[in-house]
Image 1: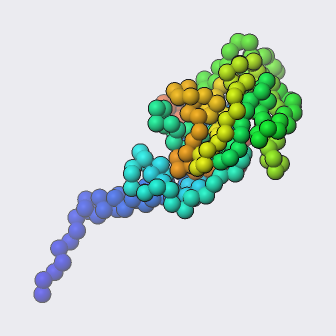
Image 2 (image 1 turned 180 degrees about the vertical axis):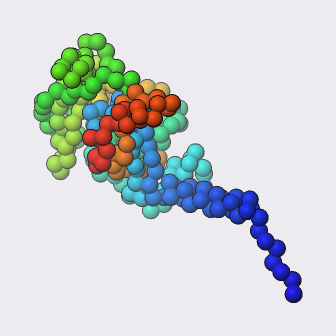
Amino acid sequence: MATKPKRSEAAETTRFLLKLALFVLLFRSFVLAPFSIPSESMLPRLLIGDYLLVTKWNYGYSRWSLPWGLPLIPGHIFANAPERGDVAVFRSHPVTDHDVIKRVIGLPGDTVQMRGGQLFLNGRAIPKQRVADFTLPVSPNYACETQYQDVTEEGRVCRYARFRETLPGGRSYYVLDQASIPEADDTGVFRVPAGHMFMMGDNRDRSGDSRFAPPVGFYFVPMRNLEGRALVTFFSTDGSAEWLKPWTWFSAARWDRIGETF
């Protein structure tokens, strides 16, 4: 009676690793994916050095749900529109083709305009209430311009004017707005076309978004470019850690930000 040839340990390990890689690929594509914050455009909600988990099922699936935008999913399946105020990850305009995170402001049929730094949605001013300043410690991940720096008992911080905006339906969030920048604070009226969104960063003076043409921004974003919705911060670092000094991995962590949901 013939006996089955034994599989080598190397073959078994390779087979296991391939299965694991396939599982990770499917999980990241269709369930949850990590996303790191590389810029200040979503201050004060998101800081450089934040690491998020993004849910992939909220808006449906397209090629942009897959790593590197592999064209394996036709069109936009199980599509769902986002809600105003969602913080979403999407693939930007082809000219500046990369993953971006911004807040959903306008949906199809909406008109959006900035007047004197105030947001107008469908012709109505969105309430903008001045609240306490936002402060952020100066760190390797964030060293603001001198005019925004301040010294406190805890050390040097960046200090910015902070406001609370409240969208129709009651959803509110904080924005930063320091300077008068005509091209950002006073715009024409944008009418959001079918199947698209108007996206903005919460740091209004430091965000290339739907207010601007490529390559600064990207104008309207097709809904099929959506990749997912921000869920929770699972790690955050101020950038002071050194790989060869493991103890700094803990001192650099911003523990109070871990677990923050959206």
